[in-house]
Image 1 (cartoon, rainbow, N blue to C red):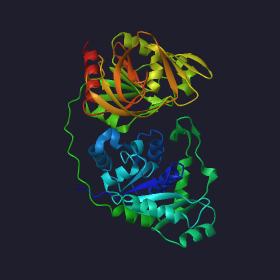
Image 2 (image 1 turned 90 degrees about the vertical axis):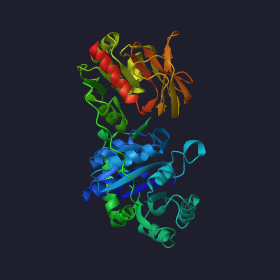
Image 3 (image 1 turned 45 degrees about the horizontal axis):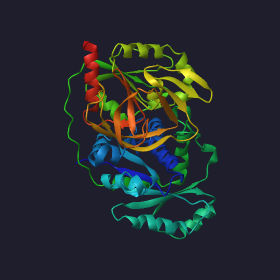
Length: 443
């Protein structure tokens, strides 16, 4: 068993301020010299970049739908090695899960981790009435320990005093409105951490307005968790997997990269915007914002390198933004740009969301990077759509989700596959990609 001080920062609803307050709490604790391990409930790629930048430790996603309950606990305990405290940022409202259920909600994760919950409540425009809300949340599910509150968007000391005149749960903070620390956003969410340091600025605000010592004591009240089984050592596979990582390709689950390494691969990071393709045996092209960098991607000779190695039989796996890069062209509001030309389709940016939600996929076609018959889960969130050639070949049947073509995903050509699904790698997924890389290297 392992004793891991931990707390979950949850919200009453989206937009109540839990992201800024969770990030501020991480920054304030780190400023006190604590090693803070950050986490994010759900499939989000953006908030973890802010957590990682603040804490100096890689933030991990905790998602019971994609990972399973055992996977959530294993990732949590494994990632907390060497940390003094763990802070978990929730998703949406505390009890908002899959299709109106508890599944994959912040409350679900709180129960898996047996962790106390700090409820962030937007107190703007209310005083005593907030306690009716707090009592409702605290009593809704007896299996969730809502242990205290942080009231956000406090208008003045008098406003906070009016709220504190009635107590429903222990109050760990009253945070004022701070429009000067707002973080910009775009179509897929907040700006990435590399683009703004504003989120870390909330650390001083939390330090001034919240009971940090009390929050640490609350985190220490969490009971021990079972230690995960030791992962067996795998021999080095002797393959190098190129991983596109820059401003255009920045959406990766940390666990996926770890699983590639544990499968014996050496990850080689590069930028398709500025680099030539390195000496690798396979490619992993994650999601991100290729539409914001289409001109640079189109001008780079890397796309020619990618097309050449695909023609040579290299296994290539692309997700969402990576899918767009593998198609023939990317059409945005600013122009029509050439891409790698590997997959027989054109990617067009649309004015509204084209796909959003959890995905469950089954491999139904031949693809060296995907094991035939295997099933995996993931998430899709995209504003683009594909215009595919009439003879386009798809290797994924979606049991849940929209994909490229209303239930089909995984557009394939030779040993390259591109899909809208951001997969959470299940057992065997990374090993299949590494075996394909090894076969290419030997050939």
